[in-house]
Image 1 (cartoon, rainbow, N blue to C red):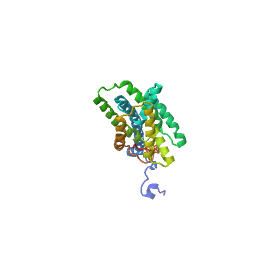
Image 2 (image 1 turned 90 degrees about the vertical axis):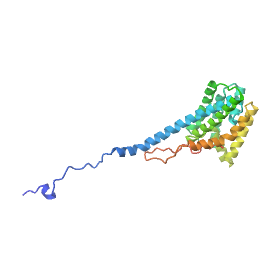
Image 3 (image 1 turned 30 degrees about the vertical axis):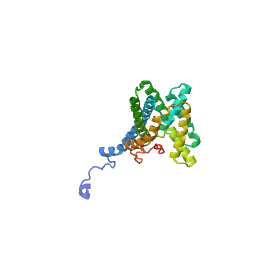
Image 4 (image 1 turned 60 degrees about the vertical axis):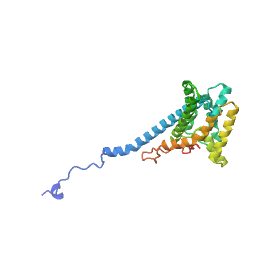
Length: 253
């Protein structure tokens, strides 16, 4: 008698199971979430970078309109602008490009934020000056100056925490500090005093606003660096990361 498979095994075998497991929606979500988070992180960093640089230019324009004294680099930009009959924002771009060339012997590597800093701040400065009326009366000028300095602190916090590369002037500062072995604070002070003196000799505006900027910008920037900081994650399994392209962005002060 022929014995069937059902007699031998006790029961007829069911259909052969497919060894390839169909991924569940939750599994797909877990795999795609890191990539989405990375994309969202990069988007936020880019928006924060360009918004911060734009606001930096606006803040510089407010200080120019207040006419109570500028920060050291804008004193230089204004002094050169007076002699070349160019817009101060255009001079800012030109000086930034020249400073960026100094990165070559210092072996500094620019990031996206470095190049963008050179261009965006100067353009925003020019456009804001074209739209912004000159305040009348000392009280209005003081308020304009204060608004410019606070906005500069916010802008500094925004573009530095984007972690896409330091500004060209900050790169020279850190590069010289590394080459000379001096502290960043000492190097920064020496550079800014030299720039301030040159700008003043060329006719740039030095005044109480210059002093107030020097005293306030460090604490303001440090505060907004903490408030606007973007969390850093380790590289995800998808191969993307929110780790900074350039971790060497110096903090003001």
